[in-house]
Length: 191
Image (cartoon, rainbow, N blue to C red; front, side, top):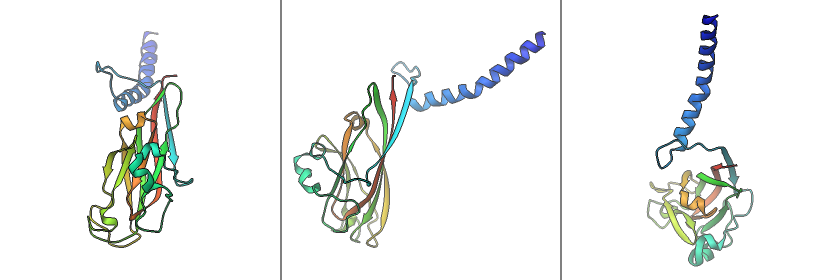
């Protein structure tokens, strides 16, 4: 009888080890509290926003008075050079929830060939705007552009302070077309 009890206890402990290891991994991925204690998210959430299925609709609040006129009339996959692009991302709001991670995946197409830093797609930049100011800048063509139509895909981590605003703008300079933009969000709700 005693041996049977030990075997059952051992089986239960080993069976629980798998989920416990997964919980420990989840704690490691989510981080720790100020006192280094584990912080578990009681209700994790995630969503993906694909923006090339609707007009870009740049919000002037994202781009500010200087950049807003430049991005007016933006279109996906434009074919004309010398036209800036802007699109706003409004994050879904849920009561008692916060977005903790945002990954923006942008596919770009060069409209003019040329070396890096030349008056072509090679000198274009990609910026993330929040509250009328650029908060992040990325160079999509660090090696220049060999042919018109060349594509590249950028993966941009959106800063936490920008996610806390619940919206931001994507700005792309004038000789590069934006083929698509997808925002992957991860967050936590307390209820």
